[in-house]
Image (tube, rainbow, N blue to C red; front, side, top):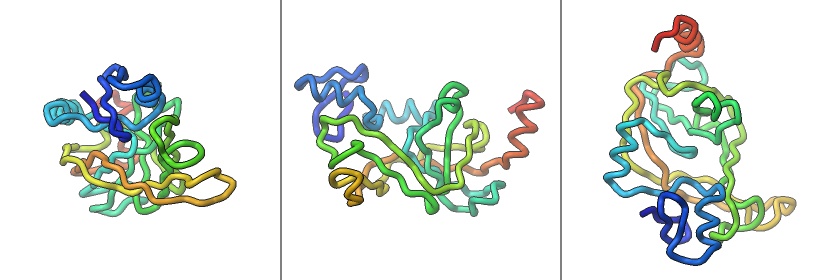
Length: 183
């Protein structure tokens, strides 16, 4: 059983023990929900990353990222989803909105993630050598207080998956690997 951010329970298929609006909010774009420990261990074993997760990179061959910096797993592009790729950016260089398109999160509106700043990079999970799940932690996103035209935002702390990576391959190394058909 998953716990939705608004406190209602949702089954993995999105159905709810509460009213229809909570069922809809579990299906319509809300962040993948925290899972129980056994499920997390299973996910970690298969290297499943969710939008919003953070990856601490020990060694980076990407000039935009220093050793020890964090990568944000960003919302995927359509092409990235079709090709099973990740879209990432250095955490300290981006700002991420997570919430309804208007107003504060209330559990009834679909929520979206939108990251600005950059640079961004699209990569395969195999470009993250020695990827290891470390647990969950809090990261700060932002959401609108009212209408976006008002320009008022507020911080929104959310639980995210924390990962570590021994080395992030450079884009050239990844391209050579793809051309040669190896991993």
